[in-house]
Image (tube, rainbow, N blue to C red; front, top):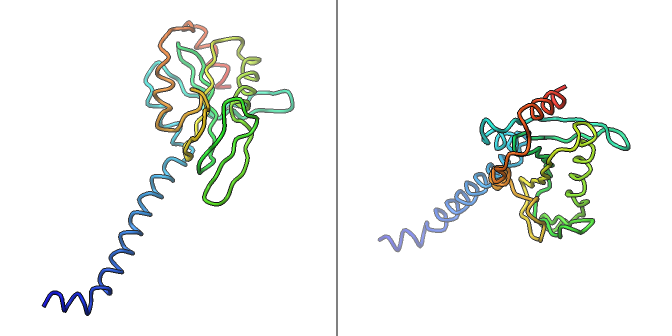
Length: 186
């Protein structure tokens, strides 16, 4: 009886069920992907660092040829962390010293300038504003898979908190930290 039922109606029941499961899995994966693509996601992770860390977002400083929008800067007793967020999605291929990295998303491929160099320009510009202090450069790819030898300063979103929190040697006085925060929050 069951064999007869499945023979007659099986494909009509199983096919929509398979389509339904595939759609649900796709929606779940997409929602996780979009959550990590949210610009606020990086700030949310940084805000979990604790009271020793002050996050200043949307920092703008003068550069050699105009202004630099730094995104997020974290000021702590352990130094100043300059965070560059890259919103590229897909797989990122390259090496720390390469001038360009390749981003592949499906069949589409494009080149981006090495974001470590971009971050270095941001650090240099920020140094002219707040002076010479211990800086930590970090590049975050919330939506990409990293496939290369990028060095320890390039991380995915899930690694960001650990990367910042691993620095536990006090390098800034409370007064210097407050002075930097006052300057950045203007």
